[in-house]
Every structure is written in structure tokens, then in C-alpha cells.
Length: 315
Ligand code: DGY
Image 1 (spheres, rainbow, N blue to C red):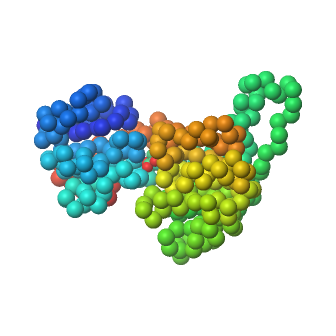
Image 2: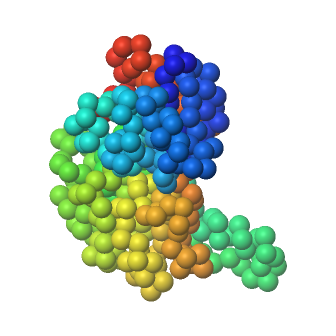
């Protein structure tokens, strides 16, 4: 398969690069300072793009149109908000993603962010490191066990979060596009109703035009000054200026954020706030899971070029 050209637009994982390099003709776009020249010289030799959710690493209409031999986009992610899936479908380009293998890690991180935010783990770490313990006792924090947890999106990841939260004796409610009759959890037909009911709201749905800014001022105010928000979905789910002012004004107790609307940019107002815990979009970022995701990316490409069924097809 050395004649098959695979384009990576952004460095994602060295294991993935090694695997691709040993099988295909791998183009690393970041190694080419002059992008226009790169496309002029190589576009016709590129048959596959490996995308991801990192900035500038997707496959938008412009990239797709610049690659006349493109057959498949294999995304190193479960979320496909940076891939123009509808356009790929229209053009007969296959799309794959990496579901399942990252579910546990993302759900683990959601629980980690809940605990870090309610129990102020990062703030108390700073407190110890800066020697404040010697001067004063650390303030009391908020208990997680037994809380009412609301989950937006009860797919694979949302369900895995619910199971984990159940083991903390939490009661679980959810909102999704429609009620899941097979689910034992309490369904709320609107996000506002869910936010008014729960104490911790976790965003775990896919980003679509329907779910963009699903967390707006009304939802934040429904969650209220004792409420906590955790986002392991996408930054675009939250109206960030509204979140910032709610955290600054104490209209929301705290937030745990893995994702941001304009990554890697983060609203600077958040840097000085102790009631927010932020991590840099690392939901699936463990060695084990990234390697499993890489294997799926490569497996999908091999299957496609060997004319076998794709492992995790999207279109
Ligand atoms: C995904 O796979 O969509 C995750 O956001 C990557 O961390």
C-alpha cells in the first residue's frame, strides 16, 4: 500500500504516525511551510485524510475540494464536528471515526472533573504548594455522593458517565433528542427542565447545529448558584461569555471543562477563577486509548484500500 497517499494535517499521536508511515505514503502537512505548493505538487497523490477534533485538523469542504483523489476520511476521534460528513457523503467519500475505545476514558474524566470541581482539588493543591496550609484551614467543599446528576446526551459516553455516577449513589436524569424507553433514568424533554431539576449538569452529546450553545444563560440560571456544570462534549455547546459571567457573578457554583469553543484559546477571564477546573481536551488522552484509536484509524484505512468492510463506518 506504499503507493497510497495519506495526509495528516496536524500531529496527533506518534504511534499513529509510525503505523501510517510503515504502511502508506504519509504526508505530514506541518512539515511543509508552503501549503499552496504542497497541494499543487501532491494533491493528486492523496487518497486519504486522517482528521481529528484538534484545531485545523478536520476535513472541511475546502480541504476535500482540494484533493481530487480523496476516497476516505478516517478521523482520529469519535466526534465528527470538524469533518464535513454531509459533503463527504455527497461526494461518495467514506468517513470513519473511533467510537467505543474511548468511552471509558471520557466518562472517567467527566467524573474526575466533577470531583475536582466540587471538592476543589486543584485549588487545594495550589493551597498546599504555596504554603497557605500553615496559615489557615482550607475552606469546606461540596459532597458529590448522592447528588442529582443531569446528563445531556445518553449515548455511549453519557451512559458510561451515568453508570459511574450511580456508584456514587447519585440519582440520574437525562435529556436527549428523544426519550430512550429502554433507559431506567429519568427523562426531561428540555434542557431547562433538566437543569432546574439537577445539581450537576454534564454535557455529553455530539455538537450539531441543534446543540450549539445548548448551555445558554437561561440554562445556567436554571442550574442556579448551587449548580455545577461539566463539559466533556464540545466547547461549542456552551455560550462561553455567559458561562464566564455566571462564574464571576456567582450565579453558578462551578464548572469543570475539558473543551472550549476556540481551542486552544481559552477565555482569559477564567484563568483567575478558583471555581473552574480546566483541562486541555484530554478526554481520550491516555496512552492505551490513543493507541487503540490509532489502530482503528489504520484498520479502517487498510480495510478500505483492501476493499473489505470498514471497521467503524460513519458514511
Ligand atoms: C473525540 O474523540 O471526539 C474526543 O473529543 C477526542 O478527545
